[in-house]
Image 1 (cartoon, rainbow, N blue to C red):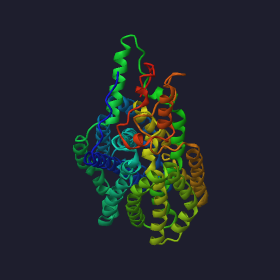
Image 2: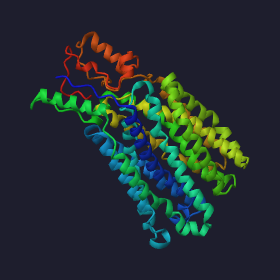
Image 3: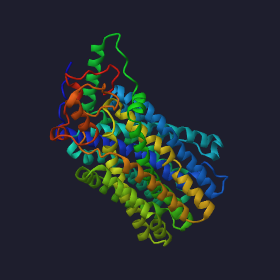
Length: 498
């Protein structure tokens, strides 16, 4: 039974999809990064007041890391239902959960009011934040990737990635303005709550925009094919595998590549943007306003370079751009801290900006790169699992490990070596990966989906187009390119996932 190809997305509708994904991810990252900045500059005083300042910061970063621990759980849950029900529905839920948790943090009583219950409540809300963000990233980048075409997928899919620096810019900007306008006592008493409460307004705006977009045409076509196969198989047909099971069976190598690719990207980012607030104030002796301003300026540069790196990945490939970024952050690790130690604001801005430019070379192609690894009915699960499981080992402990190394050695050298080690892991992972540029997302098949000896030359050609990136001009340009799996000469097993 044949299924119509997806209807090509018009330029205007694609821009609307990109805008919706960008605004949604900006709000979600604003909420997530706001917590990280607050953990570095104020939560140690409000929720762990009886500790030594550096120990209090460590405890504060522990609650920060809890959010990362919840992200893989969110990836599993949102990925499963996103592959079954669609990308749009789950993105709406993730936005509501993240915004609600952030708003509630702004209402929390502190340790001075309720004692030990304060950090407990803070940790619970951080868990909700992490769970929501674990499902947000995969859905947002897939919604754009699956609407666009292969020729410019890297560029368009990089725009949701700019939500991270945009959220960082917004969160740091609000905190910077408040710390500049308010005294330290006023900021600690009530000023820190303002940016968290603002999240409620931002979520309403994001929800209105996100509800206005259409579901991914690639997903709708894949769902129609799955329903058609189910109808053909009848009541006695085999049940389609769960997305998680299908990912671990058919794409486990891709999951490992995605996890390795995330190591340098995640660790370098949180050292540059979160730990910097600790190192610059505690070790270099700069005030927190100076550190926040440096991150603010550098985040604007980060936002600007991500689409440029994404466009470059469309021309030269995902791997070369990603490898450049991984090598760059490793080589920049020692100069980064040396510049901060000068205690010059200009040197501090240069250190953070160059680090984030190299980070952008990894982060920009990541959305398209991960999307192009997985078949449609397991893409949400595969991309989310690969990205978010790595965050537990990478981004979650990065500020914590960096702070502990600083406390133990009173030196930036072990922290720089930590970043370099992460870069080596990413260089290996991306180095052994296949190039994915120009893959037709509708044609990518699970590696175990084809019965041996069937399908002939047409199936072999489709496998090359979908899995090795050497597609034809037709399947590299058309978002609705048909998959070779619908070839009349190929017998599809009822358990196959598309």
